[in-house]
Image 1: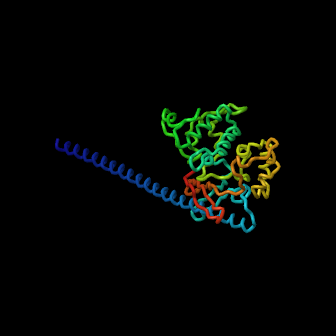
Image 2: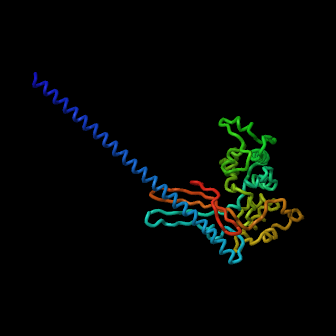
Length: 340
């Protein structure tokens, strides 16, 4: 009996030893896995931080390119910006030698778009030329006339400083009734995406000769920008819909003529070069009243840099808005964000 008892005790001890070894092995594997994950997290953090620094370097390179372009332009007596310029017309790709990565992207001129800041004067009152341009742009992108006035009223209510609701507009009293309530901004737009919050801009519009429906915002998005100040329209980079919206005496044919001229080398070199073009000579037999429209320009202060740093299998995007002083050429960053 004693012998059997010893056997049982030995068996239990063996089982306990095996279980202990198994537990220790599980703990060791878990610790090893945690350590591996921790190392990977640290490596990824280092990669992301390094990529961000490379992205900032790419942004500074773009700023230097803008400074250089202006300095060389002054030497050549060139005082205009257009989309065919090298820094605007080509995408770039720079290998990061030694680290196995790259920086790629492109630069955009922004004053050929409609600046939503032009909707409001500095004192918060309505800017009639900007509002008229926005209303015309709604027509140009295919928004039905039955919706246009409502959308324009909603935008005015969103940006004006009061709570006085326009007919078919929307103030806090409307936005507070939504499933996820919020308040009207009552200030100028801070981003193009903010337009999604305004009443009516998520409404879907059927597309001609198609079963597809797109929202009002999606129709407008490619023609819009938000800049920190009111801006003139660079007619060398504006598209046909934006030109027709800003200068309603133009039709599709005359706007196309102006875009074609802007694509030539040289494009419009002065404001008078644009306003004196044959397409701009008459408005119903009358001289064009340029004071009623958005200001014309052939120069640009604002540019965007869209770049992606690829490093260690991770892509880090950067979108920056740059402002170039037209007097001394100095460039500073207006807005910077990861991704566009």
